[in-house]
Image (cartoon, rainbow, N blue to C red):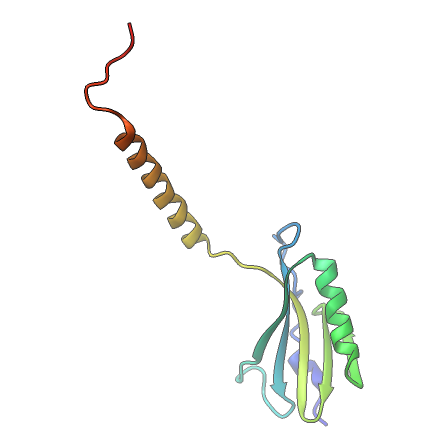
Length: 129
């Protein structure tokens, strides 16, 4: 059987600038056991989202333990499992919010508020004496 370490990249799953609170997801990445993970992208399935990092990690451990062959890869911080020709990696990932979309949304909201403020002013209304 091919060695499974090639499926477990050696970088931490949780980035240095991680969100606080319920900003994590648990994903299952699946490859055929004969695949080269450097050239074949995994099939990705979100198992849970809007979890704390601890809750997502606990769920990853429980998910991996459902398989006969499973373990934890300390270097990548991911649980793994193997079955009938498939390899699964259960990884905790921070939820990504596209900053460009957020900035665009805030800009549009600001312009709408400005337009609304101008529209609600009555023409000819003067300052009170």
